[in-house]
Length: 136
Image (cartoon, rainbow, N blue to C red):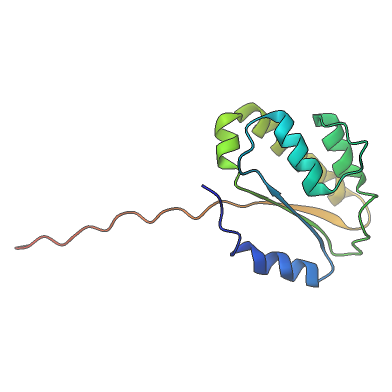
């Protein structure tokens, strides 16, 4: 199930209007580590020398020097449509989450603009409603 981008559009627009640099990492259709790294590289607009492995991703998230200045509020990375990838590649999903958490911590401890990561969950389906029974 792909997350409808509409609920995120106002949040991303508001962040951009406030001077934030925004990224959307859409994992719809990603089923391999190679595909994940390619999608991360595209979403983060990394330089061509990006190595496409966990260390390179961690380094890229700590560097961000190729991005426009985000002075101060920061940078927002929104991860969408991740559930199928997480189910297909739970170890890689866990590693991605660790890399993202470490990057957020790195920027929180430093001076300058921070990095915020939002892992967007699709809306949960509403439970079926019970039909009233006659005679009760």
